[in-house]
Image (cartoon, rainbow, N blue to C red; front, top):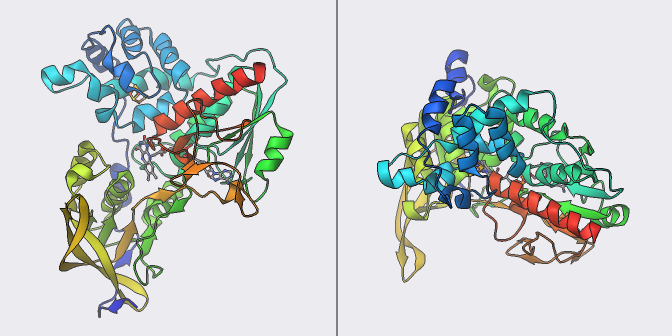
Amino acid sequence: MPGRLSDSPDVASGRLSPATLDANFDDIHPPLSRARALVEASRCYFCFDAPCIEACPTGIDIPSFIRKIATDNVRGAAMDILRENIFGGACARVCPTEVLCEGACVRVAQEGEPVAIGRLQRYATDPRMAEKRHPFSRAPATGKRIAVAGAGPAGLACAHRLAVLGHAVEVFEARPKPGGLNEYGIAAYKLVDDFARREVDFILGVGGITLHPGQALGRDLTLADLRRDYDAVFLGLGLGGVRALGLEGEAIEGVIAAVDYIAALRQADDLATLPVGRRVVVIGGGNTAIDIAVQTARLGAADVTIVYRRGPAEMSATSHEREFAQVNGVRIRHWARPVGLTAHEGHVRGVAFETTRMIGGRLEGTGETFSLVADQVFKAVGQTFIADPLNDGAHALLDLEAGRIVVDEDRRTSLADVWAGGDAIAGGEDLTVSAVQDGKIAAQAIDRALRS
Ligand SMILES: Cc1cc2nc3c(=O)[nH]c(=O)nc-3n(C[C@H](O)[C@H](O)[C@H](O)COP(=O)(O)OP(=O)(O)OC[C@H]3O[C@@H](n4cnc5c(N)ncnc54)[C@H](O)[C@@H]3O)c2cc1C
Ligand code: SF4
């Protein structure tokens, strides 16, 4: 059982005034003015064989859209982007550009400062998305019907491309709202003003896509049903499970899965109602760890510490994200792993850690320990794919590798009429933009298969 600590936990809502909360959760990358966009566009060298195109998972012709912005052809720029990436609006806001397109910009080597590709992308796509008329029209109806399970970036990108190609698409989504982690997971200050919902409305504006919210594969319908009733199936189920810390007494109050808390934060009408600890400990080293740490700090937690079992170089959070956390007052401690929890009357009060080191390529505990007092502990040690909806009784219907769906380069699974993409597939990047690309590739492959 967890040990005991005498004082009560300090968890409270409304730690900050409404005005401070509004400011803390405002857009972190506000839109560029026309003047700023033109200056930024003029910095592009319009490289031949541009490395930024190669570095964008959706292969947007970046020099082409920036050249159009430079000549005030903003609509044309938006079309260059949306043709390759229908989630161009979200990606402009959430892509870790420092390791993707902007990381490859030749201006980085010259001046240390890339062209602000993400912000230019937003400058071009925002006005186009606000127009009533959808930018793409649909090809003549093919008479083919495709089922998509999961309305996240992978599922909706696939559905949109299939609809453009003339197919009828039905999307089955377990949660009440579509959008996947854009709606329920991305840090609130990256996608403000209900952007995730507005973008889904924009995507569905193409027509030919019917959305069925609250319909879960494995609960309300089976893979066999979809394979029987549709010409092809796409699975964009994301990662529904949360990895445990593996500590005794982990189920106590105050030990929370970071993704669950973020989902509640993203759906809260009033951020002042969210209970937040005075001292917060986050365990993990990725995006999710950074996001929960920064968001609890911005909700008013006085002391937020991320603890990661390895060094900075091994964190999957980029150096840009680590700096962002530190600027927000978050401390990051490396080389320590949790070994126990302390509790007071069933509520967490602290975490004991053992320091770690690498010996012969293996991570080992040193035997030295320390403790951190905590009013809330957030688990951010990874999400897992839940394969149960794909099971037929005791048997897995699809090949899995490392717990995720195996696909070929066309995103086709081991079943000839089933494709998959996004976080649910093995070997992916776990990024919004990669999920969009998977959906797009799968849609094109499905189209080829159905026409052949
Ligand atoms: C906290 C957090 C922050 C992140 N921040 C960023 C970021 O800043 N930038 C970035 O690029 N990436 C970020 N990511 C990763 C990014 O959100 C994912 O890579 C992306 O959303 C994957 O898209 P997807 O469509 O595969 O899955 P999801 O977005 O997870 O969508 C899957 C959908 O399938 C539905 N579903 C699940 N099971 C079923 C079922 N049985 N039946 C029907 N529907 C089902 C789900 O409800 C969900 O709507 C973040 C991830 C997390 C967890
Ligand atoms: S989609 Fe993302 S990676 Fe690609 S150009 Fe846009 S911001 Fe860069």
